[in-house]
Length: 571
Image (cartoon, rainbow, N blue to C red; front, side):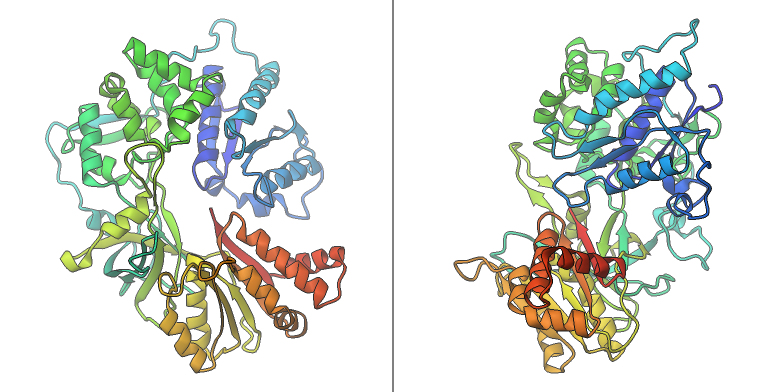
């Protein structure tokens, strides 16, 4: 390959930005261009902090052509905020934009691809003007598979492989657990905390972290690396004709390409499929593109080509995205293709399982050597016969420490919420449903430190079905350590939510925020609740503080800027 001319940097939480970036890399290789695709996390400097340094000259990037592609959801208040901010900053530093930024939108009926496809078409026109394809080589057609990133070299006889415990344990005991070296935490208890009539199974799960080197404070999150269940692993291996007990080593095809660091060498097929390949994820368009290239079966190949074409996106959405069909289920529908997939392409075809983040729901000051989480088990029905299940939450719910020792790979990272250290500062927390989890850690920590000015607004459906930690809150109320305000949405004809309780207690909220310097926190579902709570606050600022609508908005913005209004929300 020639020296890389293109650098593609991505920041990805769910994997979509990584998938688009890898698509860019493949399309560059087809055009005979060198291309380095890299996560921002692994870039040599702290990219975001570095690029926004005030002392960077306005000519810093005057030799650079760039293009920005953002992925977002227009139903959220800050739609593609990061992409817009980055595009502006690169222009300020003298960079030359090859074309206007692309703003992919999950809300579009065809998803982000509706914006990405035409944008990429224009991008390649611009890039090829600068770096034409060599005439003697030409563009590699899309029907021909590019070489796989890695080769799997199967071993004749099974080597002595390390157990998961041994693989994880090979770390400096001074280093805290991390994604590369998680702590295998014994599960102490796994208890359903919703009533039998409640629509959702929610678990309070406790781990023993004795000797782990883990430490955390209120607002931090724990990351858990889930696994595929044994029947799915067996089915996948059968479809592809793989022997789960066979071992292999992984070799990159190109110099400078690292092997996935999480993967032990050598590794068994069973371990690769159970712990690393996300076979129950919903496959992206790139999956169908590669599958079409690899398919020896005429009818299956035609269908796969249709699904991977720009014109076939509505049909692909109907077949795959809307019903949330999984990689495994798609392979069952294309059995001739599945049986012909060369093992070398496994890591190109199936994404790696991503760790899942959970708010830590306990404080070490109240529960030494313990870590607790509140997990809503994800299960829902689509038009497919089999219910859709969240990989991590369903796996965690299936583990029963009463039946024998259970160990779960986990590590901790700082969360987005930070709390005031001054003892007299009041804290207002709004946490409906499982959004209350980080605030249980906060209240436990603050009470242990003698901070009693804690105001919690908690909302759920019904008092006797999903009122998490009710006895604990009541006891703290009795001791004068907590003011609890509840909203039970289904216990009366008119639904009552936390934002209604905030408005009812407007005078108290204004007094705490404006006269007593309180901090305000919000955690929970990102869809509507943050907007509803912000609107409730704005009306309080106007009614109780006498502010005009623009002044109320400025007041809220000032609270956000000074970290006195913080949110932690999830989709």
